[in-house]
Length: 440
Figure 1 (tube, rainbow, N blue to C red):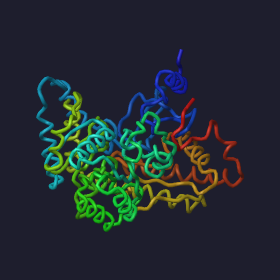
Figure 2: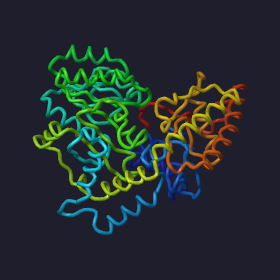
Figure 3: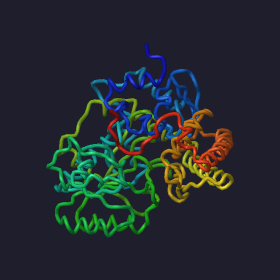
């Protein structure tokens, strides 16, 4: 009989290739053989595992999906009403039009909208529409954009092409070899790289896809330069706002610049944990969706748009963006002060990027082992924690203050363990990995 989460996970790997359906939720990426793995309940900033133990989530928070916190009552209530009235039918739900109006009001440059339910598939839709508009196949990209063939094809030419954009070690097995050379990467703030790609693939590049921000703050001139290159070469420009959207302002990060894309893509935070994503764009570009086949039954169900409408409304009413920024900056400050006090050597992400998506790294040769031990020590004190943090509205001042006390204590203990060279000795399981690996 399966008795605990570790046994459940071992069994799961016999039924689910890779153990989980989301790479970021693999226990091997966090704390192998010790991570709680499965939850029975989640509310606010807290999670209960299958054995009833409660943890404060100070790491991924639903991998960035729940900016209001888990099981938000207002969003849940709206979804429950939609379910009671029938979440799907032969007819369409009116909420999909209401949400389209709301998204276009937030982004006045946009005029039409298509929906999906996950970020990766929404990006695949955007790429399809953009290729249909440009009538050209090649895509220049910058950042992380999911798992679909159009993106993974970058590694057909070089197995390290996606390093720095996606998780290192991604193998393009199963991606048709005929897509070789169709996806070409460039880096943030490296406009010359994009210019070179376009020059070398004249009349073949039809799409530029990029995250307007992630780990680096883009130079406004870089963003403007990308737009200019797209305009001069009749290339469709896509901004992937799946991660950044609704964390810097009410809408997309690109609203901070005087630059608009032809298409923008949203997911994750826009519906607080309920499956929903959106592709918005100019009428000229989006109407190409009528000329290519893009269709799915569950893109028409009701709970996604309802959850998004409720989430967006609450974000505006409570000024959630301001709170996320405040909480993110507090956590960055906690890390900095704790490291300075204890002498632990860490490198903290710049506050000028996205404080609500904070992270740090351990500045030691055995950083992966140290990160694993840190997670192990925090778990023993009732925290789900690693070197990354997604802010949520449910991270109250009381939660943050308690976290500050705990992490300072852990940093102090960890620094001493590193000093005496006992990191590996203190680990209760294998070292967590950060790259894409086969599990067995």
